[in-house]
Length: 173
Image (cartoon, rainbow, N blue to C red; front, side, top):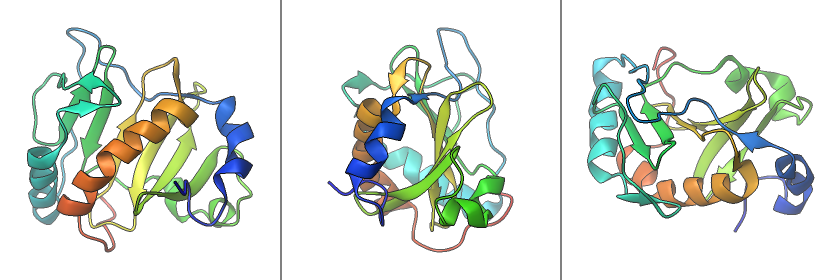
């Protein structure tokens, strides 16, 4: 599998081995911020919600509160998906495209381009690129960006390709 497009996976392995991926966890009763996409984005996000897999990396669907067509979750603590988020600033940072930002890596998994960003707390999040809506994935603390992250992105690729056409997303989501 080719992970992160123009760079061979082997070159990313050292960086990913030390990364602990995460964004927000949805333990029982936790809440997740629901995006507020524009009408065009909302339509494709609702379609994505309809075609999302029942399992991700062996974890069963466990949607966070409040329930929404723009969010989904798997497992406990949950892997969180948010559709219709705003464009991350690093999405247009030339240092990322040139491979010069140690806290962000751009590339693709199974035909879907992603931006992987290290957050201030040391966790990571993944956001789709080159699609008409931004879809963001957060892995809970303790999950490996290399192993579980790759499996999650692989499991989501077919649904993203089916529901979210290639193109340029609205800047606000």
